[in-house]
Image (tube, rainbow, N blue to C red; front, side, top):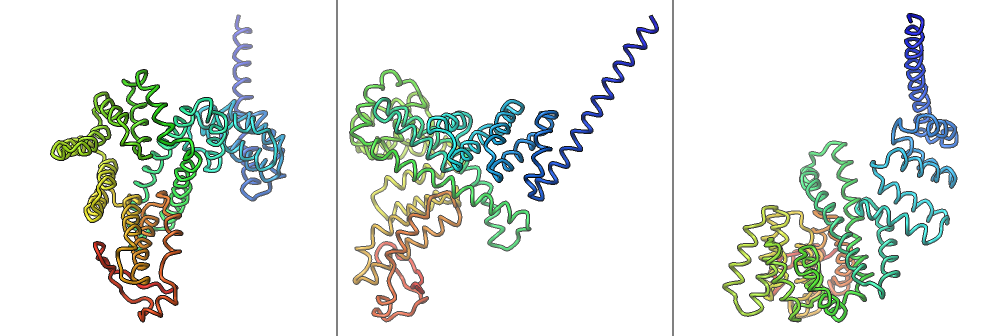
Length: 437
């Protein structure tokens, strides 16, 4: 009996010893592998990478993260597939959306895989987390959805658009919050090296995400018209009149596309407010009351919506929407500035003010120079939006306004000095600098 006990004890200790030796070997190999990776010796890193994936598959997700880059740098399709499959098998919950996204990018860049294969990989990434996909791949996936469903199931296209925009919006809000203190510190010159690096990363990522909205709007613009939306939402209303998410998306889409005049819009808004009683829904309901001539009721409803909301960023959005629905330009600007009190980094509020200025160009001056100086005021606001909110999509506004500022000839003919102060006339009443172009 003692012999058997000694035998089992020996086997147990041997097993522990083998396991410990295996762990030690994995650590040694991993450090060698990481060293070659860090020094960009990608070919030399391959044997250790292969050994780690075979013998220490669950040691670290970094085996696969580094391995993906090695495969990319060496254009090794076989290795890329092995790394991709290994990561999914051994780390099915860590950054999987990005893993799908990166593998699709590798296939695209190296002309590997069919369109259908790439679309299927991107669909996997999208279903897990659209915000972890690259901007180009979001566009690629969405264009695939449009192509596949635009006639057979346009609602699928709209739902995909909404999913992506909501996910990206959450990510942009997160960056907005992170950027606020960094931008303040940058203006004061108090950021350390680590904070400056974060500022650069957040700004770059925010700009990239900000391109999604404009790109997706362009892809969906021909499909999402009032003529197409109204029949679809009329058809599907009964089945979704108690579905808060569906109602929110239908109301938002019809509002953004300028379909408020159709009776269906009021019907959707009423159901949205009844079902959710959310600040967003009540704010839309206030707009309906105002349209129907009940200014007092609209003001009370708007206040109720505003008081109900507790998130400063969302409060700012409610104020901005009120500004966007106000016809008086001076009042609209005042409301946009109120929105900025709740979220000083709301680039869209500055872009809204910029658009008000640009629309007033023909009425804010007595000659070409004075009218074009209105675009300088608009440009300043667009550039402010770019500074405080890189994801606001301000770039296209900046490019447009720059084309319309006074030329050197027009400045010379007016007899003013470049760099001097000029007060834009009419309701704007704002001083700006004459361009030095």
